[in-house]
Length: 157
Image 1: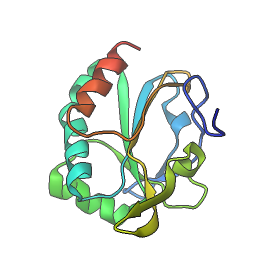
Image 2: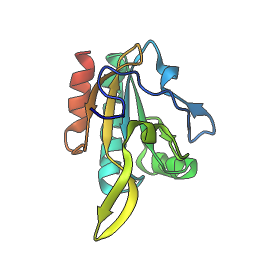
Image 3: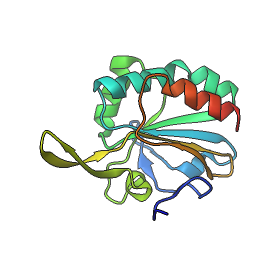
């Protein structure tokens, strides 16, 4: 049992910044199903593939009544460049503040690479039902085929 929200718990309602200068929070999607995918960094190979895959399927998600939101700690300006460079159609949000949504979910955590320890995002996707309750979680996501798997689960919700 963790101290972090799990399937069956309400999605924490923490505000994030949008690249356009506005804000967004999970409760903005009440009444709709929502997929929030957290990824480590804009313009890195895995994250680019994941964002492009979700963008490519955006129409299918919409047909299933599902909203999409991609989240990283990158700045609004980096998100704008990422969207423009890769023609992304999936909305993005910046979870840059301490005690942000990724902190509340326990996926902004200590990582290690090449002997260096640093804070980083664990690639994780949440499917939230229309009442704001976490219906499914994908932890430590492998990007290949992931967007399709999430779409299939969302259609079944």
